[in-house]
Image (cartoon, rainbow, N blue to C red):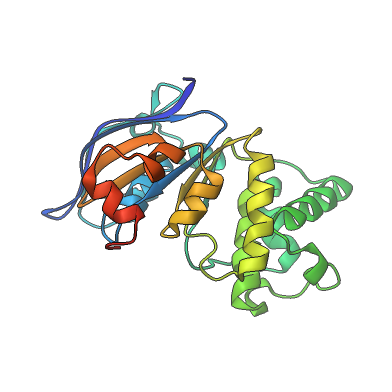
Length: 250
């Protein structure tokens, strides 16, 4: 297995409360990897450690390592450069107070791209990936925060794509998006996995089953099981995993 991300004995505490306990996990390169589990299992915390947005959490304590290409992210001084490599989409839209166009063009501009034709191409491609282009192509200079909730979430997706990330972290990305559009975006994600590693946190277990090559199940801040996705859903090694994927609790 070509490992892209390696969590090595990772523990995270919010004050005295453990959010992750001694977790060791490997995520392969250029695959869709799903993380499932009930509320407060530690799923979002795991994502926040990848690009160090965990740094913004007051009173957090992190032990262990998160390695990307064998480099510990917590030893990286230039955190901005790290975050440029990692696209992140959270459950609710976080739009910049800019036009639709500038929301998507912001990261490429920061990366030194200023040619208008090139920016136009990037913006259109990213909006198409997010299944938003046809709805906003005549409103690119409208304020992004004036879009509907579902459109703003897709704009957040487009902005994540604009980084041309090597890792894309999706935390309940479809929570504000209608089912038909969600399925279309899932098709895009299948295509994009040849270009980037996609880490998907979802409470929709069937979404994990549709998309992911491998799946990890977390519960009570611990890794319970990780395996090929179909095995997790049909022949899990742990009884707790079987109960979760069968909908006994959530």
